[in-house]
Image 1 (tube, protein in one colour):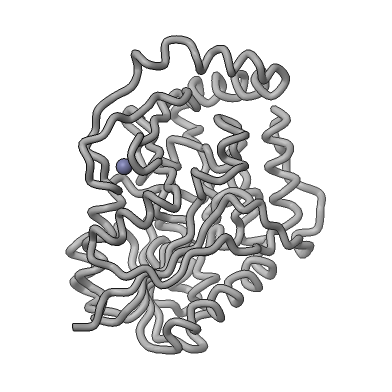
Image 2: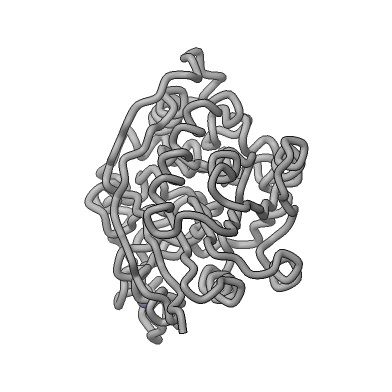
Length: 335
Ligand SMILES: [Zn+2]
């Protein structure tokens, strides 16, 4: 997904919360978020009380330890817990149906915490994608590239100038949009069957995607099997250990369960990569060009307002860096 591919003022693919069929939950969340934004201290008291009781033991998918996960707070009806060893955050959700969730509403501003107008901001998103392609080429100049969660294909269109590209996208409308624009994109999840049809590749990108996956470790392990030796995996995601994330707590802009299920810190990302036999080539907190309309959309959401279609031109973008999103390049060793 390009989702955000730029975005990062939310997640690039604009993943948002469950809205339609879970109307009552979403309404409750909006009320809760609105109230919390006005009275932050209330949230603090709420978080502290009884939290020890809600700690849980899990085998951590990042650091591999049988670890205690500390209860942090509840958000959107999900318990948010953090691994004591590596700092990986997880959202405990009840029955979230990904396939029915990621449809066109998701990208068109129909949901209150969604992506304002994904297609309307294509110019800005494409500019951001071109920058990402330039960054990737420092590690791998050409070859075959697979975009997992490619959304509307903005990134693939920029990447195809240098790479032989293909994509996988769960949202049928988005995948169809890609195919109509001439891209080789498959609808579905990055599973053994689909990856088997695609064959091996030199570069795999997951741009603001890993936090959405039901089982990120299993997916990355599968992708590594379909990566040629010496090939790279490029991941962008939030940084749960960042100052902004820690200060904002439940109000962090990327704390949006149940579409975001995992909240990686630098340590948890590195622990997972190393335990999968990958070499860490690079980790940074990049600047992003973000559509001004998306910023307005998210500010309205944070203020507890129901965002309407934004009247700001979709062509305006701002360079922002809240240092709460990271970019990682991992390499499969050449044997
Ligand atoms: Zn851990």
